[in-house]
Image (tube, rainbow, N blue to C red; front, side, top):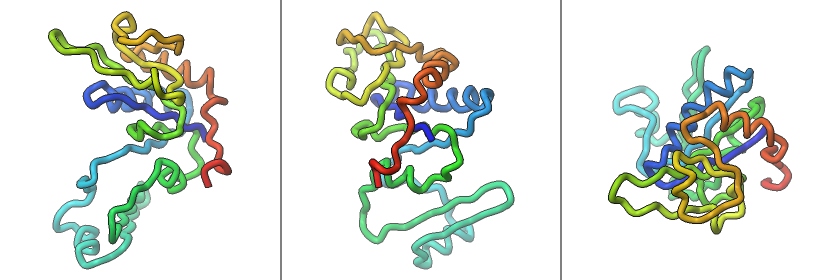
Length: 181
């Protein structure tokens, strides 16, 4: 399994890029999973549904499954700081690629997503200048990057190019389970 992170400031286009990469990778016959860092208050369950009622009654975990999908909701009694590695361990192992959105401080190789500022806005800072895990920069304006870089520059608006680059360097993104156990 290969794992690549996507990091950048809010509004930079991380979600849109990941959303566009998935069908591009699927067209190439690849199975893709996503790990997304969420805010502490998120919920995928709905008030009044059976699974929600089971959680409200005190269930630690609720698994709902059909012949088409499986969902697991786990409640923590106390706030838990899960790392990206904890979440990767929860995934089905039969996928080719995992795209990780968020977890900007993780030790995963990542693509920094950087968008040019709107007119009148100051440029956003970059991570690649200080983060050795940034392997490339996906941007819509390479000429406006605030810090020069020798990293590969990928077109933020060309998901096929980003996938081409990932596949060309696929061996760099092989996840080492033994390193993160």
